[in-house]
Image (cartoon, rainbow, N blue to C red):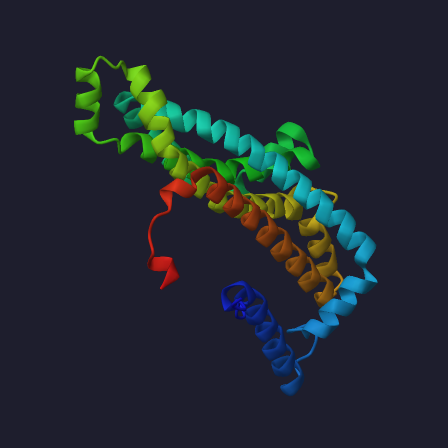
Length: 258
């Protein structure tokens, strides 16, 4: 029975992360950097331990607003992406509008959301939705718009209607694009939530970091950033797992194994 060797691929993320924190610690201590410039990871860990109840509470709030906004973006983005990819006329009419709206910095939209919904959870959810919405729409529409004309001609010759082509070819073809876009959208949703929390919220990691910054509690600010990174990595890994489970058939390249 042959023993399996050490799996460096599985261990690589942990090794690189450990190396990053070790170098960070050595640089912070070796150059004697003050905490308000760059706190050492050990000091950030102390801040996480010291303020853990507040960090945990605000982390859950940010995860909640991000998840709800992301779920709305998935539903709306998939529906609008199918609509945009359905017709060239709709594509030509809506796509420039979506590009223009996406070009607007979402931090400029938050004050309007505050006027409409007040300070709290709703602006954070909507900001996460708005910033995660566009990549999903674009990828779904792209998947539908790239059906080969020859395939459409063959299907029409066999008696298929446009709805049949969409359901049996278009939507399945766009699924790799859709699930691939989820990895981008979930990270953007965190950005949207934190933007809104720093402007118009009474809780969340963004609000906590803003309050810590006003008190010059830089280790707590970095603790909030670390928690955001952890949540983002977990949600990204979840989306990647869903992508492989749902569209593993579309990943045939061996380039990643080289």
